[in-house]
Image 1 (cartoon, rainbow, N blue to C red):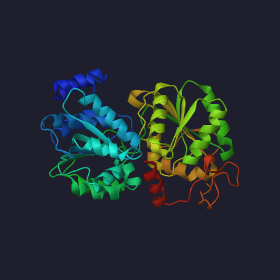
Image 2: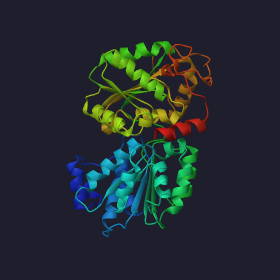
Image 3: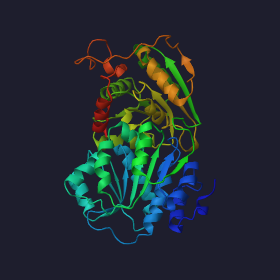
Image 4: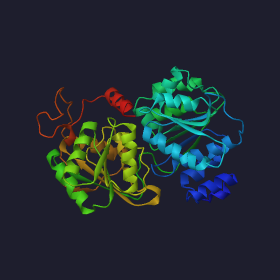
Amino acid sequence: MSDFDTLGLKPVLLAALKDAGLTTPTPIQDKAIPLAMAGNDVLGLAQTGTGKTMAFGIPLVSNLMDMPERPAAKTAKSLILAPTRELVNQIAEALRTLTKKTHLKVNVVVGGQSINKQIHHLLKGTDILVATPGRLIDLMDRKAVDLRTVKHLVLDEADQMLDMGFIHALRRIAPKLGTPRQTMLFSATMPKQMEDLSKAYLTNPQRVQVAPPGKAADKVTQSVHHLSKGDKPGKLREILSRDMDALTLVFSRTKHGAEKLMKGLVADGYNAASIHGNKSQGQRDRAIKAFRDGDIKVLVATDVAARGIDIPGVAYVINYDLPDVPDNYVHRIGRTARAGREGEAIAFCAPDEADLLRQIEKLMKIDIPVASGTAPKDPVARKPQARGQGRGGKGGQGRSAGAAKPNGNRRRRNRSRKAA
């Protein structure tokens, strides 16, 4: 691994990196930056928290600095697509640290914010457009953006975009982009669909991989508690009480469950907030800022936040409910042990989640150490929930205790699109 100043970066970029406290590239950056700066298509695979944003951001900014002409009205020179508002905002913030002393402009378009303001900002054109696919298509339909001048395309967290059903949006967007162009695709996991996606949109890509897909960061300590749904609230409070000052991210499967769980914690005196698809963008931004600043110690979230939180200080990730999609477990626990730090990932597994746990362990090729309880010998299959139950219906705690919505990839994708 080398220092940034050996990668042939422009002085203004080196100064920006130094101002941001970045002096040594991570492994994914060290391998991807030279390839991308040379104009190659890049397929980058690395664990979450290893610096993928700068791995594509640095060469993108460097290449755009060689294009001094101002963008025409409503056009963009480069496009970065990401699945969630939080991730889009995080990417844009990172890129602005690189471009603050250059002529380059970074614009963001996401759902949940005024589309008229976004149209106004795009009128002057932009060098780097960071967007969620759904809102970008809305702007395309309104003829508010012209993508024919886009010569650099980045697909960040592409596997989550596939899981959330954005492949259809990508098929609408890609034909509108300029050619020839450079395409970079980055992800933490590599499902079969990702292979197909890379073949469809990348040309002779250089593959950069610094860890096996589906593997957690080395400094994440994992454990699982086997317990009943009814015992989850007590176990959560027991764990939180051990270190009241630690930043802890708690994942719930549903929006309703996250909100109910947060309110219960607040009522018991814990300093907690929640983010999920029913929160406005402003509410989500304020909660994340308060969590980053340490004003909030416990943040309860759905998977909408699994890839949108880049907060090095997160000490614990607690999977109150195991995710329906095993890959999402990897992304959830990637919110801790970031930037070389240590972290702890704790999972709760009710009897009807035992099969989900087995799928996670199969993906990661590990046996997660058991902290308490005993795994059932014959896992209870999770059953689709009857309509009209769950939100305070029979059974005591409803979905907030871990019950699931009806199974089906289509419904999961629809929920995810609404959340983003």
